[in-house]
Image (tube, rainbow, N blue to C red):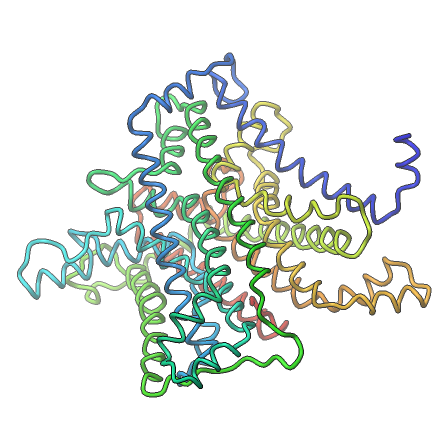
Length: 566
C-alpha cells in the first residue's frame, strides 16, 4: 500500500514532503538531543547515566525564581518600549502630514543592520556609572557624585534591548498602518475629533491585534537575546542574571562545564518561549479577523496634524538622533581612541585600531567565513522557503497546511538553545560536522526559515491564480510555470528575503556561540572575543568596518534590485 502510494506520488508532492521532512528533521533532531542532555549526568558524547539531578538542582535553587522574574521583566519591558516607539513612528510616517515624513519612512529600519554588540557598546560608554560620557559630563557640570543613569541595571537592560527592537517592530507595524482603511478615522475627524482623540480611541483599537502580535514576537526576541544580558546585566552590581546568560555561564565559565545543568535551564526556558509562540500564532490569526481594507475603492488617508505637524517631524528627528547618530557616533569615536578618556575625546585620536584590525589574519579569515556562511545560508533558506510556500499554497497536497505551523516552530527555540542542541547532537553522534562552517549553516537554516517563509508567502498571496491557470491551459508543466511566471514575479520579494537573512546571519551571535571553534570562527564570535578580552577599542573599530560593509550591501541591493523590506 505504502509502496503504491509512493510510486503514484506526483513530483510536486515528492518535493514538498522531502523538503518538509528535511526541515522537521533539522528542528526535531537537535531538540531531542537537548532534552536527552538535560537528563544526562555527563558531557556531550561522554560517559554518564540518566538522572533527574539537573532538574532537581534547577527547581530547588531559590535563584531560579529570580532568573525567571528577571527574564520575564526584561522581556516584557523591552517589548513594551520597542513596540510603543515603533507604533508612534509608524503612525507619523504612514498616516499623518508631518513635514519631511517621506524622508523618514525607511530610516527607522537602518539600525537593524547594526550588530547587537554595537548598540550595547554605545550605551555602555554613554551611561557607565563611572566612565560613561554622559555621566561624566553630568558630574562635571552639576558637581553631583551620583550618576545621572546607571546602564548596569535592569532598567538599563530594558532600555538598550527595547530601543534595539524598534526597527523590527516598525517594519511590521508600519506595514499594517499603511494598509489600514481610514474611513473610521475620517468620520471621527468630520465629527470634530482631535488628532490625539482619533489616535487613542480609533487608530490604536483597530491596530491592537497587530500590535499585540508584534509585542509577543518582540517578547520572544528579547527573552532569547544574549548580548545585552551578557554585556550589561552580568556587569551590574549586583549582577542581573537572566536565563540566557545563566545557560552560557553554566556551560562555558563553570569549572568543569556543567552541560547537563545548562541544558536543564534551556529546557525550562523552552517552555516559556513555546507558550509565547503559541500566543503569537493565536494573535496573528486574530489579526486577520480585524482586517478593515475594503478592497474596492480603498485609498489610504492622511490625517492633518494641524499645528502639531512639526512636532511629528521633531519626534522622527529625535529618534534618528538618539538611535542612529548617538549610537553610531559613540562607537565611531571609541574606535579612534587608544584608550578611553571621557574628558579628552579628540586629543588622542588615532587610526591605530583600524590598522591593527586590518592587519590581523584571524579577523580577515572570520570575515571570509561569515561571508561564506551568510551567502550559503541565505540562499538555501530562500530557495527552500519559496518551494515549500508555493507547493503548499498552490498545489492540492495533503498536509500542505502544516507548513504554517511548522514554519513558526523555530521561533520557539532561542538561538542559544538551538546551538546547544546542535552541540549535543554532533558531539554525541560525531559526524565530522562539528567544528566546521557547515554546522553554522545548519543552525541558520533552522533559525531563519520562518523569515524566509514569511517573505515568500507575503508575495505569493498577491499573485492571482489565473496566471498559472492560463499557463496550464496552454499545456505548460507546473515547473515551467514556476520558472517563467512565478519566479520573475517573486523575484523582488526573494531578493529582499535574501538580503534580510544575509544581514541577520552576518551579525548573529547567540545561535553559534557554542558551535564556533578556532577552525570556523565568524566575525560575530570575534567581536564577542574582543569584548571578553577587554579590547573594546578594537571591538569598536571592527564593528564600524562590519557596519559599513553591511550598509553598503543593503544600499547596493536597494539601488540595483529595488529591494524593499516592507
